[in-house]
Length: 269
Ligand SMILES: NC(=O)c1ccc[n+]([C@@H]2O[C@H](COP(=O)([O-])OP(=O)(O)OC[C@H]3O[C@@H](n4cnc5c(N)ncnc54)[C@H](OP(=O)(O)O)[C@@H]3O)[C@@H](O)[C@H]2O)c1
Image (tube, rainbow, N blue to C red; front, side):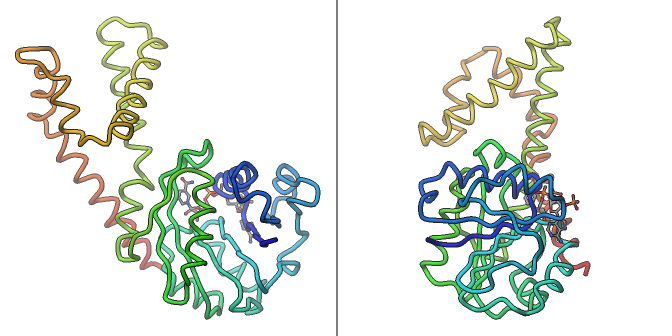
């Protein structure tokens, strides 16, 4: 049995434990959980399989995968409680925005394998897009284990650490951009006389369906766009308007701005 300890049971920690309980690795792991709020522990505790810890002093510091799901500013308090006890046989997995693997190692006084991951809020329904990177102490086995964990809440891909701020700018913050798109599309329907509820349902399903089609067919979105755009039709009139107003540039700039902000936040101690 492989041991996993999840520290922090908010949106992300809660999503991970629920995802792991449904994942193929369920029967090969036992999970310990800890949060400063005992109510959050109680909400996910489950017999011998998911055990609640009373404090960080009870964390198993050998042969364990510790997943940190707290806010970045809470890591020093956790490091203090763990007091340099973590052995190199542990794997540290951090989803803390902006915290580099080297910073995590330094704050924890830990000289072993670390995986840094950036999931997104869709983890709560098992649809996260997660990008991960690892430090030089990680073996292929560590990486496979981390991949299994994040595949329990969606899709997971490896990248290099220098791209993690861009990951934050694209898929970390990305759901918010798409919520704006859905809201704006439904406002368009509203303006054209549709009831609000119908407009929102149509806009939501359109975004979901369009994304599913890109994924299902594997075709480049430009090809799919051309397939629904007929000469002198309705779609080309709308696309012309979107091009004229710089929709593409707006999204490129949005990802760039969020990436730069993530870089900036990563520099603040
Ligand atoms: N939410 C996202 O979309 C998203 C996406 C990618 C990455 N992340 C990263 O994921 C991390 C967690 O985000 P989240 O949205 O899940 O945050 P969250 O909902 O606030 O969850 C964090 C949990 O950790 C608890 N906590 C605080 N200090 C603790 C300690 N010393 N020991 C144990 N538990 C402690 C918090 O309790 P209190 O509330 O009482 O402080 C809270 O229950 C953040 O670092 C964030 O950067 C989040």
